Length: 452
Image 1 (cartoon, rainbow, N blue to C red):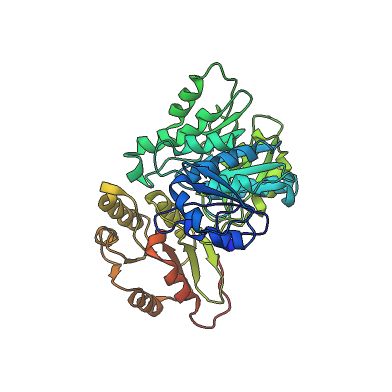
Image 2: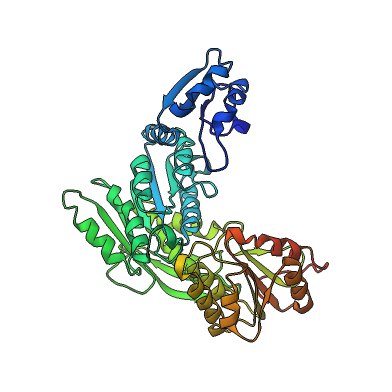
C-alpha cells in the first residue's frame, strides 16, 4: 500500500491523500503508469478518473481517503499476534520508543521487532506504520502524537494496543488543547482504549497520575493491569530507580527495582541527562508488562544511543562540545536540555531559537526559559527569532539576540574554546540545524569529546 507516487511499485494499492499543499489525485495516472493495480480515490475527485488510462486497474471510491487508510491499517493490525505497545506524551515519547524497541531487539531479534520510524505518529503516520507490520514481526512499538482532543482515541481505535503509556504532560502544542489540563485529558484517551487483559503503564510522578488512575478505576467491567513507575523511591509503584549516579560522561546509572523483590539489576544508560532515567523506567515498565526478562531490559537500555537531533553529541573533529537538540522544542524539553548542558564541564553556551505553538503563553514561556538558563548558571545565551527576545531580556547580561544566522555563528566563533560546550535548541520551524551545520565545519581539531 502506497501514498507516494515516488515509491509506487508494480502491484501496489495507491491511496490518494490530499493535504494543505498537495493533492495526490493529481498524480493518479503516474501511480497507474508505475504499476499500481488499485486506487483509493475520493468521491470528490471522481471526475478526474474519466481522463485517465486506467486499463484493468480497480478503483475504490470513498468519502475520505484518510479514513480509508485508517480502515486498511485497522484490518492489517489483526494479523499481528504479538504485543503492540502504544506510547504518547508531551516530551520524550520518541526516546522511550527507541529504548523499548532496543529492549525488544535484545529479547527477540531486530527482524522480529517493528517500531515507528521517524515521526510517523499522526493520523496518517500511524496507519502507515501499522501497514508496514508483516507476519515476521512478533512485537511492535507505536508512537502516537496529537494536536487536539480525539486524535489519540482515533489512533488507538485503529492500533488496538495491548500496552499503553503516557510518558508525561508538559506545555507543548497548547494551542490545540486549550490548556495543560486539556493535554492531560487528550493524552489520557490512550487508557480508554484498553480491554480486559491489557496493561496501562502510568507515570506515578506525573501531576495527572490520579486523573488517569481514576479513569481506569471507573472501568470495573474491564480487568486491566496497571503498572506504575517512579524515580522518587515510591514504594507503592512496581518499577523504580534506586542508587542513581551520574557518570563522568554525563550519562547515568541506577538500580532498577521491579515488583519482584528478587529482581533488581544495575542499569547504565548511553544517553545524556537525568531526565532519561524516567524515560528508561517508562521503557522498562512497558517491557516488564510484555514479560521481557530483566537482563534483556538492561542490555536494550544500554544499547540505546539516542536519535539524531535529540541531545546528539556531534563529533566532527572539533575540540569543543556541540550538542544538537534541534529536533523540536517546548519549555519542558528546553529546560531538560539546559540541565544536560550544565552537566558537562567547561563554559556553557545556549543557542536558542523560537519555540512554536505556545499560544497566548508564548511570551511568558520564552521569558521563563531565559530565567531558567540564568538560574542554572548558563554562561551565555545566544538567540535568534522574534519570540526569543523575551528570553534574552530575562537572562540579562551575557545574552545576545541576533537577526541572522551568519551574525550569530560569527559571534560564536570568536568565543568558542576547547573548554566550551554549545547546546543548539529550537523548534523545527526555527531551522536551528543551520547553526549546527556551520559549527561542524569549524577548524581542524580532532579531539571533540563529551567529558574533559
